[in-house]
Length: 111
Length: 114
Image 1 (cartoon, chains in turn blue, cyan):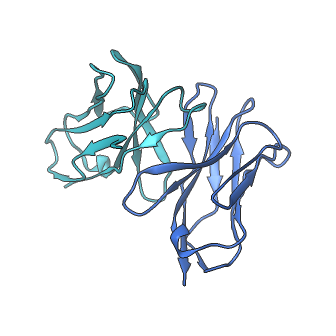
Image 2 (cartoon, each protein chain N blue to C red):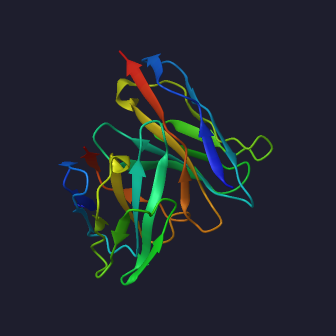
């Protein structure tokens, strides 16, 4: 079946450090891929998405490239800020059109 | 801009009690969803609805019921609460299918069953 696997957290970085959060997936067909972010005490928000192979999604300095050959959708940011501290969820759509989420990766950025 | 509103934010139940988690959206979205989030796990889909009067099961529907009498409201009912239902519950909505349109989430309900 379809599934998403993310790197375990928590990830702790200093401000201005480079961020990578790994995400790999298993899917039949050609799913769309998403990153959602959950700030403390809030619901999830869509951060970025990519709908086909080699697409790059980007938003707020975050980027992720849909790599079909490695079944990956890693999230990157060149210089993180304290305000980026949150839980990040990778997700894909299954053939029924519903989202399947990874387990989430907590990011903590220290000043 | 209310978006998706969930109530209550926190609740403690005793085993065997029942309760309803409320969810309302003001964006005229057709699709609504209930997810549960367990520690270290991703969100699991409980139930979803594609429009008023239409509901369907997700991955983990056992122990829950839903109804969708209006476009705005999508309550989740727990009839006989069990400790395994201790979780954080999120309601979400989207204009189109969640795989094509982005989901808007409420801020969650933290439920403990003791």
